[in-house]
Image: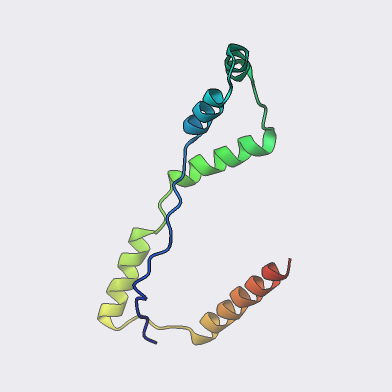
Length: 106
């Protein structure tokens, strides 16, 4: 299967950080009472937010790829020892497609 470049690049939407949004909301007000209110506002996001932040920080510190396992597989391929279990690959592919289809319906 050949993939060709269309030459068109998708539009880029800039992402602003929380500080930019906070600054924008502060400057949007016209009086000093709005500025004081923005500085004194507090938000409690709950336990789920704390758990998500904890998970995010733990995932950020873990490698995406196991470099040792990749090196072992590369070595096995170069030596001709690597064998693909076609049945297992097919089963996992079918399971992935089934999950994608089921998730799209929801």
